[in-house]
Image 1: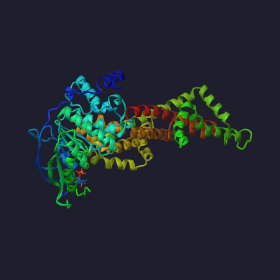
Image 2: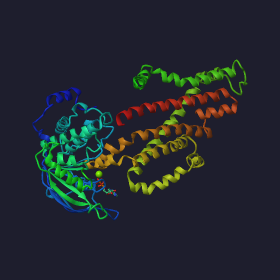
Image 3: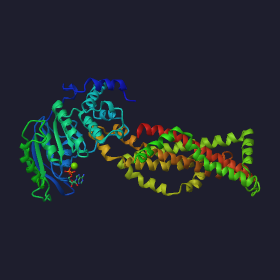
Image 4: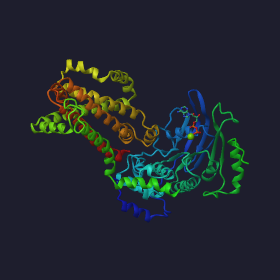
Length: 280
Length: 267
Ligand SMILES: Nc1ncnc2c1ncn2[C@@H]1O[C@H](COP(=O)(O)OP(=O)(O)O)[C@@H](O)[C@H]1O
Ligand SMILES: [Mg+2]
């Protein structure tokens, strides 16, 4: 059923266990994202207000905030999955459109079609105008990149949660998005798998250079991955009037960062304080 | 601990090595009933042949009808009616269920009406069908189609309403909409519940076949039932019941095979 015979897949896996050359077709033209006084209310209840910032092309920005503060809401607005927001969001040089093709979303849940193989699920992300052979070779590269080349024929229920998240990431990358939107993509994974996925994401970013907006509630994940961290929150602990940009900080140091780096300790405790958690 | 872990692994293995095992298990009770039947009619002689003829007499009745060709005619026409009625009802159910399941407008417009029709016990249509269509072939097929329609319609409709919105949104996010979204996400997602609806509809078809043939017919298994009752041929009456059981089970098994193939591809 799968178009690539099993032999091909194995050759592929053997050929590039340690690929350092960026795969041509995975590279994207990264785009900027500008938020202009963005707000969102549901049934009169304000969730987000006055969010303004500019994400530069190729930047990784982590969106940090307590649960329910509107992180997903903000991300969905950028992906064109939600049109009810106020203010403007501009991607590159034009406003975000419905289900914007320049973005790709990695959801919190893998959201793979259970009746399709992993490979066919990744194909789902390919842009429409791509030729079949180009599409196939791009899928090959992506499966390689996320380490699923040998599992590509399996169904989602036959693989682990970490693999499913990698498949979901590959599907998002298949679009060669100018902006990659990731909504707590590693939230459901065990600690070790999570660290591996973070490394994988850095690897992907190094190869594609795409702009990344990463929602997370994990301070350490944000510190490990991001160029800048956007802390969303209300005034004090009261969120009645909606969350907004509480702080926007640059993370010092060049990635990959040492996970135990002490110079981040100060920033870490500031972020914890911003989330209303004592760090000691 | 080790044995507890080993046990579940061993069970499927054993079941696989003995494929006839389940069939044997399932045949145990019917064979027991057959044995009892033979016992009370033969050696114990508890019933007169007009009350309950022996199994052998039923078999003889079957062979007799087979010889003069009547059995083929009865079975053939009944199977044909079920097939046409089931197909007509199932296809209509699939189409209408898809329309109402996918379009909010069509749902708002038509669902109350379909719901009202569903509230009518399907057999209540019989007098009207008799009046308008007559109870010839068309009327019978129509009655069976009505019986088959509702299970299919209901399963398609509610399954489409309940397709995981997360998957649909993911499809949309990756640029799928309209027909492409339908064939990529929504239809595959509803294959398993739709097959449950189809199997229910098939059972309903047999039910409505007998109802239609009992009402008015000159051939078919329902006719065999009523004719045997009138002639006091309990052996033929039992024969017709056994044949209905076998045909119902066989057609359901055939649909089950298609279902398993479909589920392999879509679930
Ligand atoms: N479609 C919706 N309708 C109504 N309320 C919503 C909707 N989506 C999100 N919300 C509300 O907005 C708030 C923020 O949600 P969300 O962005 O998912 O938070 P999180 O930061 O955990 O991702 C929550 O209180 C949630 O209940
Ligand atoms: Mg969220």
